[in-house]
Structure formats: C-alpha cells, structure tokens
Image (cartoon, rainbow, N blue to C red; front, side):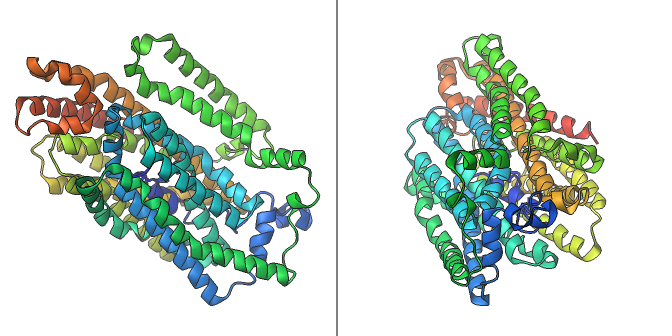
Length: 570
C-alpha cells in the first residue's frame, strides 16, 4: 500500500518495495532478460517463438552506448529513490487516511487488498514486458501508479481509497519487477547480483527522512498532499529511461536489427487475445485473486456486520473462496503457461523455501504491519517523527542484511542454509523481544533494536531462500520459479493482514467498552474508528489509559500468535 512495500514483498513492509527488490536479485524475473520457458534456444522453434518484447530488447541492447546506459541506470536509481521515499512518507499517513473516513479498523483490509494484488501481478507484468516491450510495460506501471496516487489523494471514502490501492500496488510492484528485468537485460550474470541491489540502496537514506517529511506534511497540510505530490515527481524520474529506450529502439530499427512486432502485422485481434490469455494465465490469475479475496476479506469485515461470524453472507463468501482455491490447482495442472507451475512442488527445496517465505510474511503482517504503528501513536504516545523511524528501521536493517548477504554469497559461493538458519533465529528472537517490550515502559531504543533485528532476519532469509529456489530448478525455469516464490510470499502477507484484522476487530471494540470510564463509553465507536480521535484524549487521563490498555492487550495477543506460529514450525 502506499507507504508500505511486500515485495515488499519484501520488503516485507508496503513498503512492499524492499522485499520485491531484494527478491529478484539473482536474475530478476527472467534469468536472461527474456521468457525462460519460451526462449528461442529452448523451445526449438527458432526466432518465431521469441516474443516481441524479447526480440526488441535484444536488438536494443546491441545499440546501447556507455553514456546511454549511464543515463538509463541513473533513471532507474531516481525511480527507486522516488518510490522508496514515497513509501516511507506515505506509510505513516495511511492510518490518518483511513481514520479520516472513520474506518481505522479497516487498515488491515486495505493491506489485504494491496498484498493480494502484489501476489498475482508479478508474473503477468513480467510477461507483458516480454510480449509488448520494456518501454510499454514501464509506461503501464507508471500510469497505474499515477492513477493510484491521484485516486488516493482525492478519495472521499475508504472504498475509493482501497480501490486506489489496486492500481497503486499493481503499478508499484510492476515497476519493481521491471527494474530488475532491465538490470538483467543490461548486465552480465557475474555482476547482476550487485547491480540488482541498486534499487534497494535508497532505503538506507529514505527510511530516516521519510517519516520527518510525513510529520511536516501533517503539521502544515493534509495527508492528501502526501499522496498527490508523487504524481508530479515520479514521471520526471522516469523520463530519462523512457527517452533512452525509445531512442535506442528507433536506432535499432534504422539499423535493421528490429523486426516488426507480430501482433501488429499478421495476427488477428482474437488470436492475439487468446495468445495473451494463455501466456499470462489470465484464468489462473482470476481464480487465485478471486479465491483469496473471497476467503480473506471477510476475516477483516466480519466484526462490522450485525451478525458477525454468524452472518450468512460472510459464511457464503468464505465458502466460495475455498471452492475457487480448490479449483485453482486443477486449472494450473491444465494451463499451458501456469501462474504457479505445480511441477515445481516436486522439489523439496522449492516447497520448503516457499513454505518458509509464506510463514515469515504471515508472521510479520500479524505482529507488525497493520497496527503496530497505530499502537506506537496511541498506547506509547510517540510522535509521527519517532513512531515512523521505529517501524521503518525494519526496512533499513533488511536492506543492509540483504546487501551484505548478497556480497558474501558472491564471494563464498551459493551456500544458503547458514543464512536461512541465522535469519530464522534472528526473526524469532525479534518477535520475542517485541513481546517482552510490549509494556508502555519499554525504552524506545529497545523498540528500534527489535525492529532492526526483525529486519535483519528477514533480509537474510529472503536472499537465501530465493537463491535456494533458483538453485533447485534448471535454468529454463528460474524465472517461473522466482515468480512463484514471490507470489506465495505475498499470499502469506495477505493472510497475515487478514488474521490481524480479524483479531483487532474481535478484541479492541469490546476492550474499549470494558475499560473506558462510564461517561466515555459512548465514544467507544469513534475511538475504535479513528486513531486521530484516540490520540485526542490527554495522555495520562482515564480515557487515554483505557484506550492504551485496549491497544496493548490486543497487540500482545497478536504477538503471541506470531511467536507461536513461527516457533511451532522450527
């Protein structure tokens, strides 16, 4: 979500960017810059089987000059810096945005929507780049991001805000994947791991300045400007790359290196649609996204219905979601180019790595992502300028540990087991520290340390498990395996967001009614719906003490669930 990450999905935060950027560091979405399944060298079909976008970038790379590549990479860095800073600025604003609609409890619902989009958009966006071209795919991602920014900035209700997350998440995740695809297109395999870390480096700076900018925006303007301003900034960062790709494509055409695109010459519209449907596995994408949406969204909405979990609509929606998820693997076994190839599950390394990624993403989105920031504001009475850096220190530490692991693996060779075990130990210890420091008397440095330890563990695990996934399959399926791994991780994030929303919606309203002074019990609904209202009560007063207690006890439950889930599987 704006101001969050999965990639990342990884980083594990919507700050989805950290996770996604690190995750493609060993070859991007496609190991050679084109479709690993249908390449000319492997399909046996000659040049006709190579997709249009792949043929175009192969021709364009023959026309690059050193200065042209420098300009392109500068643009890649500027876009990465812009989206990184935007994530750090808008993350603190999200709670204020949904609170302005009196819907703070729906923060987890927004995260579910974001993570579901992140889960299913990666493979199709990479395929779009292969089918239509790199410039076209970049442009689609930028346009989706701009539409998301504008809709969020102008939204008048939480429905519009959540809908904008679909466009925003699709564009942001697509941009991260395409940056890695471009790096894979223009770098040697030996240097690719190092170059692929380029989009991660801005987090080392933006994680500290972003919350300060957010605090200034809230002090002198509104949260809306914190979203809208990026619609002007991001296109400027993209312009050098767009011009470079366009000019070099024209140069390749003049030199006779670029053949006409198939879909623009002899293919009919129906043939093109059928081919794209097969290539992008549109039915599989719809089954997975619809099934997960119908299953997970009711978990965050049940507490808001009159009958709660007894509501027939809630039960029917969950049932339909389960049915679609059962149909999904059946379709994938028949699909010509499946979104999640079931054949990969024969590898124990692949299956174990995906299971671990699913688990730690789920744990993070239970313990930290949706409501920990609100807890710091309300139950700890921390300002935005301090609560933001505490939560964002996760991104800083995960980026550092991922970069460090990448460099060490480059020097020592691919031995991911030690990094996975170390990362899992750090991750478990961090959740335990958060649980021990859940009281209002825990020091701020300890909270920083816990978040940083959590991030360090996540960074080590993400780099190592993805490397293990890519080592577990042949070269032709590296891209497919990587995309499947990232999709499973983002599904874990969606599950975690849904579970945290279910717990929050189940516990907080009742605790507020139980703990608030008699004269303030009528305010329980307003307090539950807005972090701004919750923070408006004087610190130290009976009302604020009751609110802080409700938040603290609910966060404790979430942390116990997270710790129990992780340790029970290790």
